[in-house]
Length: 383
Ligand code: COS
Image 1 (cartoon, rainbow, N blue to C red):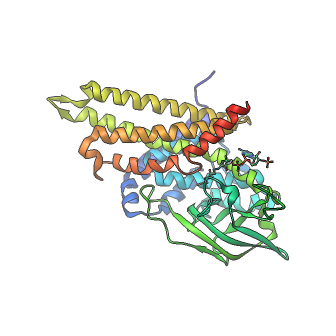
Image 2: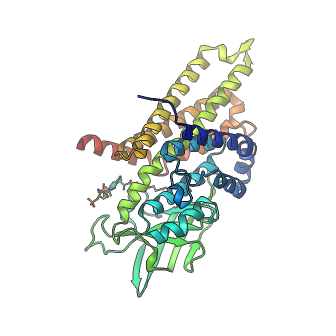
Image 3: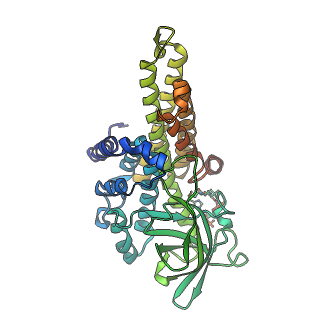
């Protein structure tokens, strides 16, 4: 077994680290404080190929694979979790279109997502009354001549106000004829389509530089060519996309936690109490030891899931395990970092306060920890 990264993976990791350190990190606190969507930073990611890391190069992507994607996400999240989630969802949307789209759809959207022309991609699955159970969605798409008409509401849509294109799921088959998840289809909806209304941005605890909005579809007409994949086959597209998306969020949590460990270590070596650096107290050393061990375990789980996906293996359970463990570990790690910094950990002058607020959502979005346990348990019991 080899633990070394390939040349491509090292290159992507290095480029992401350099950009994150030089450009993103210096403005991360301001992005958070001002709740500013960093358009310029997102464009910078596009120029480095980081908005479409695992999208084939013939479609404008970097074609660098899933491991590279995870490594890049870790680096960007280490600097700014808000930027990282925008990057994650855009990558996910690009991959979904590259995988399930018709030739025309791939050509129309993938290169423009990768280049930043569309700013970002958005993923419209959750609804006000259907989050963990998307099969219960009530948004509908009704055929009208040569068009589909979408009606309903979506909730918690990352980049929903800025995304040039969004994938949206809607019920196309009635519940009695298409029970459960069987009557759901997937559509590509462009920004500014009449009938698509963007609601007020959420005032969030963390990732305040990302855009999270509710969407309302009120007689929103899209052409027949906007159907992505098979009619009534949309639920599986969502599940497959989320399997990959969970590697992204796992990587995001790892990046935030890595920044927290670094900050806690720096502080522990510098801060003196009882006439010596607090790093010399076993109470602090054991915290740092546990934090680093959990961080490494999380990283290995994420990279295993990424490697499996990259090599065409089944990876659903492993992606859920990576997401479950790394996001929960990252919350613990950031919490301990605040504890090590004491009072300074609780004020905005030091970044660990932001890390703890930012990391909290990672156990919730792209499937809660509870949903990950459902996926893992089903696989364990079936296997
Ligand atoms: N890949 C491919 N197909 C999958 C799949 C996967 N990972 N998971 C499920 N499917 C298929 C099943 O095989 C089944 O197909 P058939 O109808 O042909 O039998 C269909 O999808 C329905 O699957 P299932 O019965 O398991 O669906 P459930 O309604 O029980 O849902 C969970 C399962 C809970 C795992 C799913 O609803 C889920 O992931 N929920 C969380 C959603 C989420 O992450 N939301 C966050 C949105 S982004 S912020």
